[in-house]
Length: 237
Length: 235
Image 1 (cartoon, rainbow over the protein chains, first blue to last red):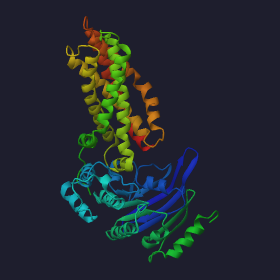
Image 2 (cartoon, rainbow over the protein chains, first blue to last red; image 1 turned 180 degrees about the vertical axis):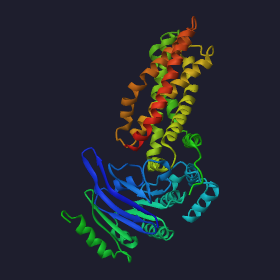
Image 3 (tube, rainbow over the protein chains, first blue to last red; image 1 turned 120 degrees about the vertical axis):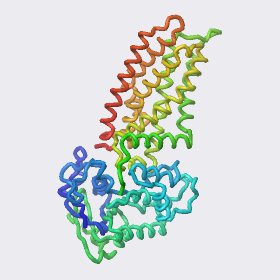
Image 4 (cartoon, rainbow over the protein chains, first blue to last red; image 1 turned 90 degrees about the vertical axis):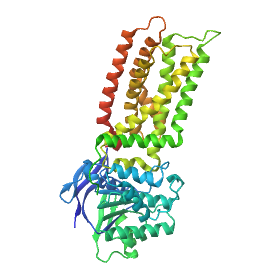
């Protein structure tokens, strides 16, 4: 089992302290869910874990390696956000081929076909631009893009935002599938029920500080997540 | 997991190819830039030409041509980077293992190609409107335009990336970009006017301004390769 360890991570923007002394450990084969109100520092945390931001203090370690700007470390991470991170004027196949090539994946064509089938887009019109896709199809394609290079770490930032219930259910299933495949999955969400349905580890952020961090073998009941969230995001909680 | 990195040059070429393919799909940027550049030339032709004599001094023609390049290039840069902003595609690009300098180089190449295509249309048009002969030193003129365009694109790509998340990016791009690229435009205009002089083309002077543009292009690209990563990631 490989771990992703945050050791006293802090991030400051000018005078604003977005993250303050965050220390925790995430493990492969588990889903960690980060909760917190707007402005709690969730996006900053994802920015640091995805290597797009550098922590002002502390360090992030993937196994024994320090994660930073080194482009090789970026191959360890797959990212699915609420925006698809794709080019609307390219087709699904062209989008995946582009990113597959940039990651140096051998036999990109075969990999693209396999990934499209894997996310249920195997039968889309080959000449259809991605911008013509529904929101749900875009998220499927976004997941395919994030999985193209088989990253051991998968980051989700509000991936179900604006998805219909069916799409949200599909996404929950995918997150479970990636956990079963042995990936480290980190999900940032405002949806407490979705959090309860997948979380092995639950973290709550408030004003840049980690106010709760616990791993439970049996997961978390929806009521427990709700009361924990209310308690830990309250002033003095 | 990936087998091997494709290499810096191959990755830069992939980025450039991607940008040009996106443009080829819609031709939106190309049409907009060509329209704007043509409009600039047309407006000046109405403003400066009176009576039957449509010829202008070479320095005026050169100035009008480079103003058209400046305006159309700025619009092109802005729209090209809108594509990266839509759907946060730039995030996926920055998350990939491609060195940021290769992303920068690819974007400079794509921007230069698009701008140069517009210049290939607008320059003969300006020559017709202003009764100027450009065929005498056509290759040299093309080289001047190409070097100036590389210098412009080298700075423009950095500023456009830095302004991706700014609400007033279109206004700010012009405000920030124009003072920096002003020497390139001035050198380009001077060199072009010396080449266009039908009576006594000053080849020595033209060579000097060509060298100035070449040095500016090298300096701007070098600084851009170094500055793109912190600017694009906001770090």
